[in-house]
Image 1: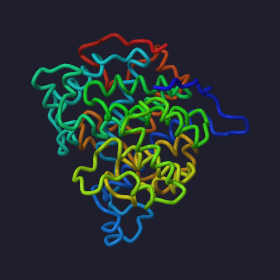
Image 2 (image 1 turned 60 degrees about the vertical axis):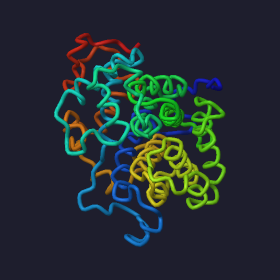
Image 3 (image 1 turned 90 degrees about the horizontal axis):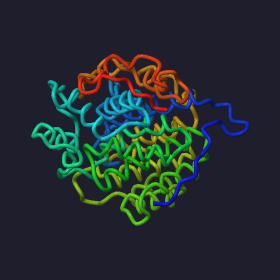
Image 4 (image 1 turned 180 degrees about the horizontal axis):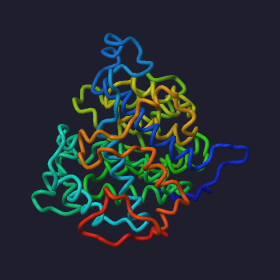
Length: 357
């Protein structure tokens, strides 16, 4: 991997968007993108057009985040507890305490990578063996990696390291790379980096010859030609599963680059490309939300996002992404270890609150 220079976690000269606003933009943007894209998940653009024309807003009667949002909350709370001291053991304990050892919601653990991970954990496998399943390359880490970038604002390399630690329980190879790219991109955007630097930060933390890097380069190269060109450059035609991390992450960055960081355009571009639309729009929303801040999110879209319903992870019910953003925003007391850990995230296996300093 190429080394990544630290991007100072302060607004650029003349930039009036503060870190707290970017943190809230990133995580609320993720949830908004998730809710916008959920109805179009696994669809082709032609199917989307036949059903709704072009999606320009919510098409569900009761829009809400899916497993993407709930797993992002899960990862965010995990970071709020352990900070930079996060280890695979912490992540594994959290998966057991709050997912694997509890009754599951109607989503039953969510996607293929999560199902495989839960089955392995219940069989007694520990990380990294718990990540050895058929979908270790999925976008399940990418969908929950944005909190790492929020927490490590201005430090793409550290954000990528934290994402790899988080993903060690559930993903391997390209699945890890996809999560690292998202985390690094959000970390750069949190510091006010321009779109081109956000993309460069993502590419810098993954192997240059990886499928993820190749797909990312193709997507952003085609971005100026619009969403059809981005999709054509990245999508694996005829492959039935849409949760390929290299594909989903590249589509999300392509949408973000095509929109030049504009929030509304980025998420709608991702949604209307179909495939794993909730995840691609969630990632594009996190990147654009960190770039432009929470005020860039249309008010009607933001207002529809309430506390998590716990449809996938019952333990996350009642948590709001904005509260998680406030926990992770740099400089907050919780991150110094001198405030109580969020009550819903006390792990039986580790009773001591750790400092993230």
